[in-house]
Image (tube, rainbow, N blue to C red; front, side, top):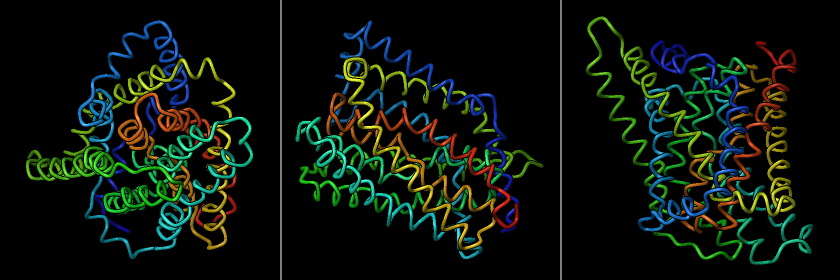
Length: 360
């Protein structure tokens, strides 16, 4: 792949900045702040929880838009023309994201919550936790993909192609896949709310990002290429995106803080299948890349992309479908708690094993 504009566009996401370098610290602080505020100011969080329209929490929707929209501006669908170049990494990512990961998540949910933990969790609660796992498993990572790729010095153009293709598939596959898997576990699917959530958090931001990208391209300053104009715009939005991410973490843990403090064993139980899923999916994707002799700068990002989750979407849909205080929403919040340290540990492992792959 030799698209200069595409490469410049991804590289512009910027090296690893101060925020990304200390991501786990910021998230940990926001988790602590959220739990503290939720315990100290329960009335405030009850008020915020009540700000809903059509089962969609308005505050959460605004914050997630603040995170997702700048990322969608960076998605260059023109990069899809490179889909036939070096297809191995794409094949692994797509197979893991859409043919393995959602179904393994359901299987793990049933194994742990309906078999191994059956004496610890009520059946109705178990169904809610399984639903949360399904939402996480069916939402492959988008926003954080670039961070994981940069941390492993991945091929930026290839990463962008993977993100673009995943987003296209997600627009059409997420709602039917979630409905199928929720139906398998005997949970009633409110199709209207599910489709509304996909429209709000995937389709509309994707369209808005594409329109913005085209406007920026058309109105680039004289002597400035389109990639530079897009970089300048997304750099301008980046502080707001970071604030939205941190505020979302605070808000989500504020809503669920009382459960986390009152039932730490429950949090640990929910974390178990998430940990097994994360490390297991990484092993499958990374192992397949190793056996197929995929170059490291493609192998590491494709395995990390398959492992990580689009938790913003999963949290938003869980809240829309089941409510802020539901077991499904709690599970997606625990997914946030687990994801950052897990992904950083896998980044470290990938970097240590770099020499085992060609092109390292």
